[in-house]
Length: 533
Image (cartoon, rainbow, N blue to C red):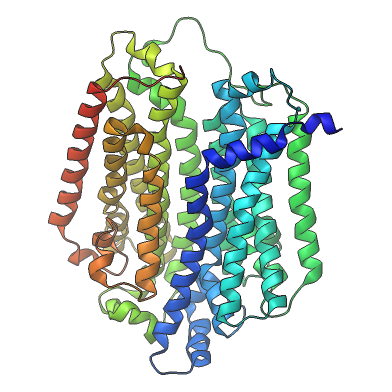
């Protein structure tokens, strides 16, 4: 049995060295999210009793629909209630991207086959990828749990919370490993994993709509704190059950890996004909062919997501918590109808994730270059400019398409529920469309870095994390609005009514994006193409 795991230790050190900067993002971003939400509640007390403030939030119809009931009426429970979705999602993304990079991507580029020509066990790389992902989850969960102790929880409660987060991370790690066995490309594995992530987020939202005690909470790690209840009625039996579920998923991944050869998968993409169709004559057409599955998957997730938000939004009525109205010192609800606020927040949150989709499309540029596949295209009658623009245009059009789709579907469902097709349809559409320039700026930043500093394109993920952290910090009154404006999403923030959004500001974002793209393409034209050699 030991020969199957020979070389695991060497693999772990190698993977840690390759991932040392990315791991910092996955470890510390959840901690920053926790700190930001903790300061949100502290800053909103304004001399009032914290229990009273939290009780008001718990009775708020809008907040209850988004987050579900508060787990416990103290600072610890309220902070967990507000931040657990973001923390679990970030940890899940980190685990999934890590295992895909060190398993399926290495197989795709030929590294695994090369390494396995040495004395290496059959399961060495998958075991090492698992451990590297778990290392980041262990440290991130530990730091977040220590933060809960600082906020006032007992060591026993923090330990239960730590284990809940740990098992959620293990679950997502297994999910990523299973995706690697199902698809023979890293892009395909990433697509499946992100669909799983989006599905777990949707299940969590539906569980909150239903009072947070539906059976579907078992299917979404984001909802697992509703099962273990670490800071109220601790459920050890529930903790054991989610542990078994996480272990089972990883065991299934290992079993599936034993049933395939290196480079193969259970759903292998079929080889096309020797002669390409006329529709594949251009680089843009080829890029669309490679990414259309990812686009269709995101379309499905967005439709389900915005349908849930739109169907519930009209039912939100009555008085909204006065503290929520004065978030970061602004009485911003005076101009926003209460029944549109819920869908406005939902659109804003999803626009942040659509910018991640744009990044996934753009990273194909670097991936294809390192793998050497773009050389085959550039060897033909295709210029470097045309090749790079093909994926840039695809990222621009598809990200805009997702936002337009979200706006149209959300507006349609909302108006169907309300029974009136008045100005709300256009207003909801504009809520979503107005986010396009902010998402496009991420594409511009990547284009610039890829053109001149291709090794620094990983910084784009940190930039996205920074924009998300600015949002959390602003809500927690850690920063002023003047600092929040460094985020491209600030001009189209959910606290700004549509009629107050600056058209000039949106145009400036688009112009800045185009300038960065042109500069980046020019830089790519001048530099040499990187290869595996």
